[in-house]
Length: 174
Image 1 (cartoon, rainbow, N blue to C red):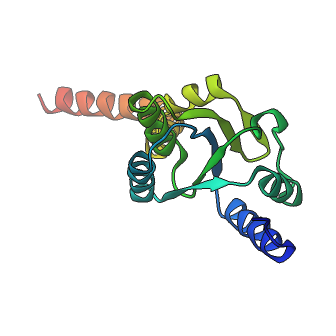
Image 2 (tube, rainbow, N blue to C red; image 1 turned 180 degrees about the vertical axis):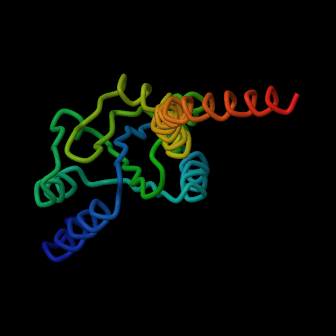
């Protein structure tokens, strides 16, 4: 049964709304997944603050154009399901990849992240990125290390002067 124009506009605007609220979108080929497997994947993603929807390629393409995002034409062929990532990206991608290993029917086509499309190889590399907290800790360490060395360098002459005066005071007392 054909979709009415009003329903197409509603679906396309729904995609646009989800695109605006997502940090990244995972494109997958779900051909061969059972309903039980899809439900399991949706539950895992929901626990991570993301969701998974089967998409109509032409309407999703229209929403991408409206949002000013890249349109991976070659990836929008055949059955496509989308994972809209609203939380931290790396754990969700790891969940997708782990699920794809368990269920060979799920094929990850790539990720739209910001204004870039990342293919399958790049998707696997994203999992190895440290979490936000680890990156912030590394940044703090990188900033704090030189600052600590600078303070030590600045205070070293004062420390030495205090030690010399203390030694002189002990000599005078003896």
